[in-house]
Length: 201
Image (cartoon, rainbow, N blue to C red; front, side):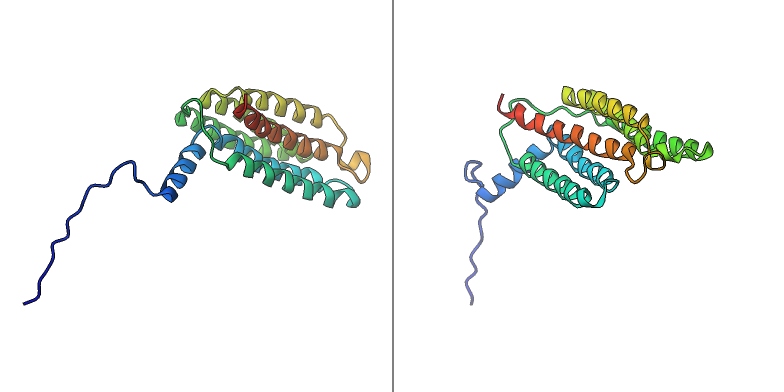
């Protein structure tokens, strides 16, 4: 008659957790914290940088596109490194949800209005201005002042860019698009750099 052995489950001591699990759990917790905003911002900074770079003359276009991608990848990699947080993260999802809803509705409404008045050449700076306003919601949702300064800087850059000449007025270079794209990218990258600096201060 075969002998069967009963398997007993012994409780796992909380101090003997797998190192791999600890690393994954720390990474998940830190990425759910205040760094997720700057990471997303830097990713969008890459898109804005490429959008502005494509309006440059051919010799500068490739260099600017490559730089936009390289800077964004480097910053995202640095921001994604797990670190010790001094304070618990604050994120009010309902406030940010309202900001995103406003952003989406305002962008669609603005594009429709510009088309109605044959002013589509101002689409990019106006979209950038609206995206900048949405960072006010992220500021209120996280209490991180870096998003307040990002909102003000983006609105300023896009407001100035709207006054600059476009492709039809300046020949081959769409100055309005270049300033909007690269200027907005610099603001978003700056927010990422500021987050990194705050880790060590």
